[in-house]
Length: 196
Length: 157
Image 1 (cartoon, rainbow over the protein chains, first blue to last red):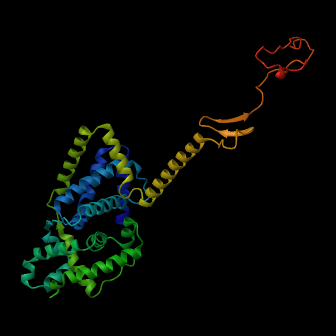
Image 2: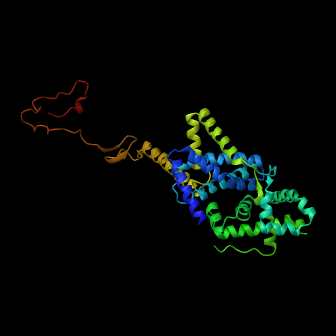
């Protein structure tokens, strides 16, 4: 329900932006920057690349806005642009990968029940080495193929349902599930040491 | 929505990945980003030539998800076929029909300008020639062959 209200709000902002109201597009940028930052950062594992890509993504969205007809939600539309541009960037970047870490929101982590379970099960050494886990998670993500990384980012980190991921990537939901399955298997192998 | 419930290994991986939900840029990042985005937009408008902007927009249109790749490939293929067809048709029309068997007595052949019916008959006469003996005919004029025509080739009187 909240999503639907949000979508209506987006539609109004999009309509105003299409009519030439630059402030409306600014509002869209402010609204979508955090989520798109998360998407691009978790796919690139690099803060500088994320910042540059976000600039390109919003510039492209701005130039293409007139052609947005509302067949999908603006959210899905801009996510599609972001994922495609990031995948293209990663293919061009190839193996030139330099990870740089974002800050952790400690308060958010404390409030997350599911995560609290994981952390409380860990010994104090693990807790003090949360950044090491963060670094290893990023490394493990970088060892996945770009397509697998995109699916893991959207499903496990951003919490998008299979149906939306399938729409954004232009693949079937079965393909999304299959990519998730193989990505999880690979991640288990890469992160086995953190299981103890 | 029936999303699968994770169990066992999957649940463990999912909970580890959950940690990444809390990787955040510093506070105020979005506002700062917006300011830089506006600056960049203004800078691009100032430095961009009309051609560059046009090419950039074309690239935006063709690139990255807004137009599916299969559609681009199909379009490019159709354009190539159309251009190829035009080139072939142009070659055919410039060459015209083969003259090896002699000039056709009548028919239609193509040249590069238009379809022209060719009739190897007399020129178009807007009114019929007068009959022999009629007023306006030339039968009173005697045709005398010139001297250089051999006598045996001269018409008998």
